[in-house]
Image (cartoon, rainbow, N blue to C red; front, side, top):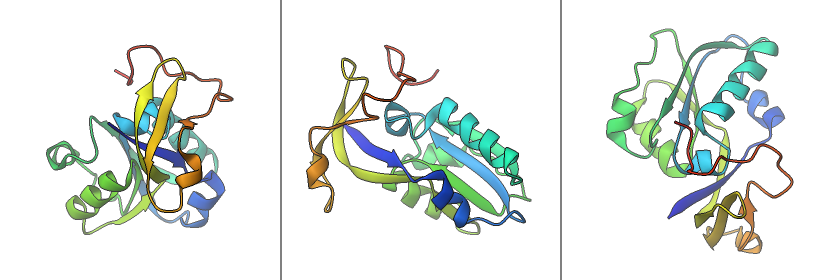
Length: 157
């Protein structure tokens, strides 16, 4: 079972941020990595883009699964981090909201529903959509047009 997500457009994410905020990026290395909306590569890209656009990224960390509270307990956020950018599904978002209650949490992903990872399609296939995403059933995320395929064997190590 995989939580299937797609990224919120970068422009929409930064429209919810100010350059005065000190950002910590937490990225899920499980389901979100399979959809390329999390994992090390996506986190590094997000951090690089934000820094290039004048945002202050004070920390970034990949967690095995953002939906597991014990994984988030291992995250040592710097005191100066006032906003957490979470690269995970809605379950990870809820867990992070619980663990980091004193900080603003901004999600970088939209969770479409539940599916499975299909290596031949190089993506997660949506089979059980959340309301509003029924038209996405059977599609792989990321789509075939993405050039940066997930390596065989799955998640970033």
